Length: 147
Length: 294
Image 1 (spheres, rainbow over the protein chains, first blue to last red):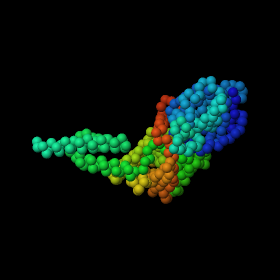
Image 2 (cartoon, each protein chain N blue to C red):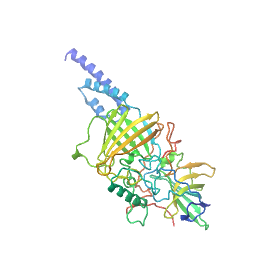
Image 3 (spheres, rainbow over the protein chains, first blue to last red):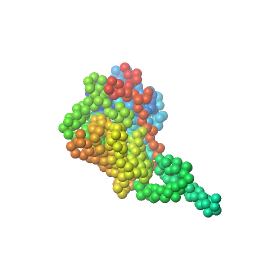
Image 4 (cartoon, rainbow over the protein chains, first blue to last red):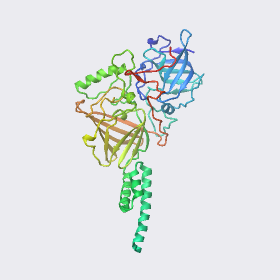
């Protein structure tokens, strides 16, 4: 497992700042996260908490010293995740994934989800903080990348 | 009992049944017509009047735009007066035409809001969508949630997540002042100008963040919206907010909503404050609970 982050504040590997596209998508503030930094984590899924108000993905990440660290990634509400093509069992324990996220400002091992790439290369949005895709007449809960 | 009276009763019964059928259809189309149902179920008189009213009511439906179904905000809900605003990035703000006092307050609150999750900051301010688990007015105009419109002659409902705007278009005015108290969504009345729904809202609680920044208004704020369909799949809401306490002139902006599949399952509302909510407010700060984090 590898961890790549942007921003010197975490002092970790990799720099690939990706500015947040725009909107805050959820009921609460994301001020706990540094929305101007984006980090990538390669990790193994420990647990997915498919709950209101927001979904959380618990990950096990090996840090630079080889120590396993549990990360908490906050996503959007179950409804919004569903709008983006997620299902409650899209991720399961043991899955190896790559996560893009905005890290916490206080340096704790947490982040706000931007996107996930599954082991088979499938990419899924789910950001609580990226732009709202334009809706369309054919938008459905399964196909729309809504809130 | 004369024959003539029996025949008239029979005719009245048929009329009542026909009226009930028509009103039933209207109820299916409109929801919220329990009053008509009650009248139909209990009436022994007034069938002719009910028939007239019902037909007139159905005729009114045909004059209203069909906004049935789900809509979604176009652009970002981060800011009300910018379509592609970025939230929680320092420097991001709205531009209400505040007077000096309210502009100074907004600038100070923007700094406090940046620190709402900072355990060490002395005086943070937490966004009201989290505090109340509801958007309130005017934040409800620009949210990431589904917007469902239910349009009837007498009233329009706009359902947004777990909040519902009730807009009365039956010609009533606002309640008298001594019957008003400030609430998250205030009181709304509306009127149809052709195919445009003009909505007036007053009596909104002060302190509500207008969006994801602490842009607030006084309880003297009056919100005027002109909602219309600008193409087959787009609704437009032209908003003008006047506030003699906070603003030097009306704060105006326009939001657009795109049509979704009208029969899509509506999104389950977000709940907050439940045991699974890992973002509680503790000591006036928005916390983020990280289990097992060392």
